[in-house]
Length: 227
Image 1: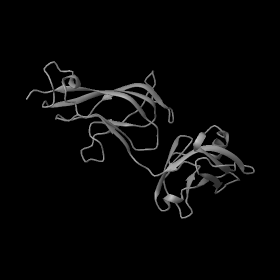
Image 2: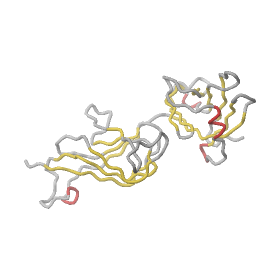
Image 3: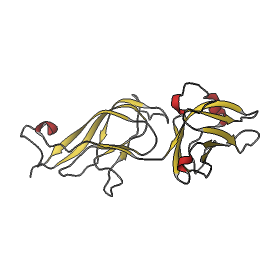
Image 4: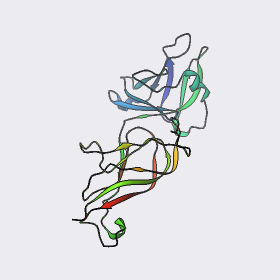
């Protein structure tokens, strides 16, 4: 079976013939470095790549790895429709090893960021008095149209700046209930901003984990102050 994404895995550490971990090979280019691993869209955390180009993730949640898929769940998720993320693995769940295919994404962790330019024109500030380049203002609320978003932070100053003010979003359904882990949000989302009075107020967003988040459009609400 070909590994479309260049990865391949095998279960290990069996207890009562049920695998307790999954070793994933194919990360030779990252030996000695840190790799983030996501299986079936679930962020499992960061792992150090061993000298054989592998990482070992737990199939049992723990203090050090708070998220995990069991061998039974991986077997149930077997499918040939995972595209370039399709990864062949061999796992045991109380019987002989089973060959299945699951989506695995692993690689160097990075922070994805985006930021709008500071508002300077009359239209940017929706001001009747003219351009707002020299006016101090503060952002107090934002509205964003997102597609298939799982994790994102919003603010006006990007971290890791010491003065960063990025805040993690908690997505909710139409009834105001928090979305379950792994459930993506699509639609209009709005919330308050933590900002300080000044000449910038540049709305920004960032994603610090390997989760999707597409920003289709965004806007920010400002309060201007007189000199």
